[in-house]
Image (cartoon, rainbow, N blue to C red; front, side, top):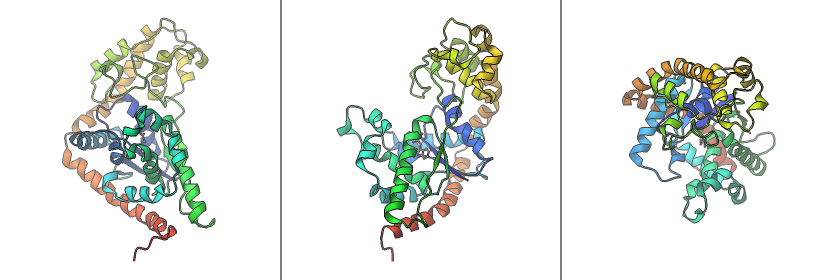
Length: 334
Ligand code: TRP
């Protein structure tokens, strides 16, 4: 089992990042060989500030390590130090089809009405993502629900490339399977159960940051939007109650249990009882992460050393697949 996944280097890390991706990565370390990277090359597909990108790359690295990614066990790096990602993307651009990319919902959402003004990188973003995983012969790719379509595209690209350029008994690429966490795959805003928890929400009350202390966490949970009904005792009772569903989902994810189990315990109770329990659970689980994060994010040298050594290991794994890809395409390299 080889696990590969990436995350865009954003600042203001929050509970949504932790529960949506990072925590699953941490768990994957028990199950196979893992490569995790900061998708800094993806980050330039949209307008960005260079100094912020650099700061966010290090910040996200600190967060991953604080949350439990062990850089001596897993390979932790940023794409920019492994040029094979960009190289493989170009080679796959010959296989990816315009029609496939045109159907990507993330492209449609992010480009909006202004397709003419969107960057080429935004359009070919999923091809780079395919390169990210195919480069390492990933067998499993943990992602959020919103990335499932990109993973399917990666499989389509791998399949077409293998069909067009490889023999059946010696395929160049492995078709990766997505791993989508069942519970709390999508953590929503504490102020609006229909919007994803996001670093760019103008209200800081909408999210729980990894830098928040115990008081801030308790306060945000207390002020979280809810409805007047008590909690149901079964999952179906959460339908049409996005805020309640979100809080219960967060509880289940943090406690490592199911939504049904949480409702088994709190069904019939009001939020006056549930919210303090949720706040305390969050504080207990996040405190050690918060400690490590605050400490490590100031240590630029340590972070750079982690990324440098991860990149070195990643490059070694990347080269054989890249060589095979060049050769399969008939590209002469001396
Ligand atoms: N596009 C992913 C996201 O925004 C990040 C990403 C880039 C990724 N490359 C990847 C995820 C490869 C999984 C595998 O969440």
